[in-house]
Structure formats: C-alpha cells, structure tokens
Length: 248
Image (tube, rainbow, N blue to C red; front, side, top):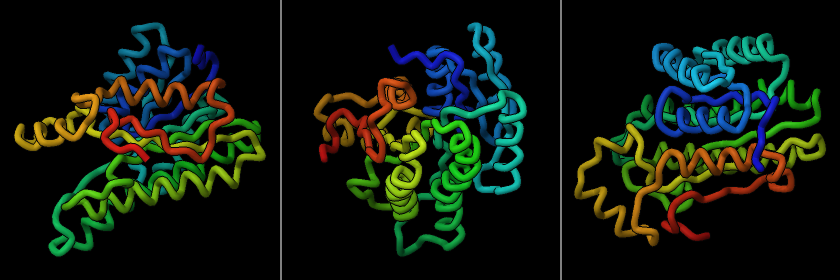
C-alpha cells in the first residue's frame, strides 16, 4: 500500500525539518526525488542519504521566491527524469512580530516565499502534469491558518492564502486527473520550533488532546498518503495533522 514506484517527486524546502523527512519518506515508498532548497550543502547530504538507502535523488538549488531559479529548477528535474508526478510545496520562512510593528519588507518576504513561491512552483509543475494527465500537488499550510496566532499576521495570511490557492487550483485541474490538497500541521518538533522557550512549549502541549507534539515523520506519512493512488479521490481538502489541537 502507498507505493510510489517509478513516480517522480519534487519537494521544496527539503534541506531540513518536514521537507527532509518528507523526502526520505517518499524515497522509502519508491519515488525518485528532486530535493530543492537554498542550502546546497544540506541538499547534498540528503541526496547521499537517499542514494545510500538504494534510492534515486538529485539536488536542485532553488529559492522559490525567485522566478528564474524556479524555472531553472523545474527544467533540471524534467531533463533528469522526463516527468513530474508529485509536487510538495513545503518551503517557508517566518518574520514574526506584532502587526503594529511589522515592517513592509517582512510582510512581503513571508508572502513572497510562502504563498507566491508555491504559486510559481505550481505553475511550472502543471505543464508536465497536464501533458501526462495526472499529478499530485500537496501544499504545506498550518493549523494557525485556521486558528490565527498573535505575532504572525504575515505567516498566518500566507498559510491561509495557501489553503485558498489549493482549492482554486484543485477545481481548475480536476478534469486532468490532478489532485491538489493541503496539509495543516499543528505543533511539530522541527529545527524551527526547537529554540522556543520551554514555558511556551508546555503551554502549547496543554492545548493538544493527544498530549504530545507531532513529529516530522507524522507529517511526512500524511504527505505520502496524499501522493499515492489510494488518495486518488481526494482533492481540494485540508488534512489536519495536529493531534486534535484544531478540529474543524
């Protein structure tokens, strides 16, 4: 079940955290991987790990906020593998502060990477997917897109926008057997959350019915499912991976 043999997947933001775990999980399921991020050193290490386990992978240096880099990255993938079956839009940044103090450049940077970057990647992926009349697009949103969160107006707006983008594209491409879904992780243990004060972590854990934080692997498993044939009748949906933190 959930075999991705002979499928080609591209994961953005793959150098660490959820993106890295997702790349490894997709490779374990049999997919050939294109791993994209700005950190070429970390990508090289990830490619080596996938190849060491018997998989096939290529590093794709890419800043999703830069259209020229996105175009070049997708061209590299198509030249290498000849097709693209799965796109995972995971790349994201934060620039947290209260809305009253938020600088325009911090607003623009987060929206540019988290939302516009996903849009640019979807545009490039759709050319290949429409020709082959099949594909899976999976966008990484967030539980805060559904609940809100103080000090993250830019991040929350970008992730809420990503949910809207997911549903719009799902309607546009459904007739070509392309599904588009979003994952909304809750509080996940990643390098991005490690520096948070323990007091805040304890408060967050008290809000989670399962009484624990999620792991990168929890999110990666949901992505593998949505990328599989078993999820062929699911599109335009938001799958919460949050331990019951938000039920809606």
